[in-house]
Image (cartoon, rainbow, N blue to C red):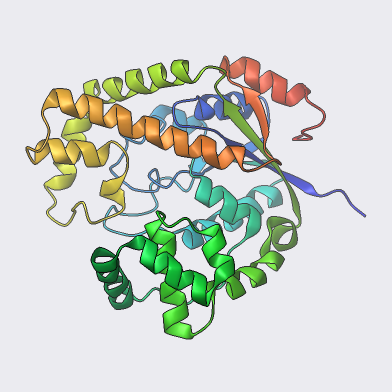
Length: 316
């Protein structure tokens, strides 16, 4: 049997230096970089997403950057389709595909595939949301447990998005969402693309150091013009906080500042705090995946050298 081609996923919490390591690898290997970031897909959202500069992108292009207008929604299913296409193209050119970013839902979708779920029903979702406001999320979770105990075990009562989706699927089809999950087992990346997925996470040795980097980076974004960037987006009049793009970390807080709901000092604190919470969620995802190889962060060139020397990773 011929050895499988490799796809590298380089992930980790926000501000850990994933992009820098990916660029260091790209300077040494023939690679195609593919963004694994749910906010970088949007055009006009550059500073707050820490998107690579124009000069960097000219030298090291990234697939899946600037592919959507901020008014559009971009889902895990959209990412899966686009990422599969980008990976297939990279392999056809004899290059190593590197997924780089921190949207863990996208990584899980790429690794495991997605079940072919029914289309969303906005009306039904709104109805379930109203029920939750009336009776509480715990009551809805108990309902889910009655109709789909397997899904209820996997979905925390406080995870409102997943809880709504599970109930929506059951009410619209009469079929438990866990039935669709069972079908998903045949959709993993090995079966879809015939590749070996190597997952590497850059992780901080000291959470306090990461928090300091996060605080400093958000302040640097503000100094670089993040408020003006959001002002330009708001001036279009077709964007609002109801859209996923504007709910991205940093953008939501600046929007609230521009609405007069936050002082500038409160904006600095709120933006950094939201980013720290994002990093915490990302690390929680990573801890739940034993197949992910964690390595301490460091200078980007040092980390890249370590990856290239580590024969267990088999990335090249």
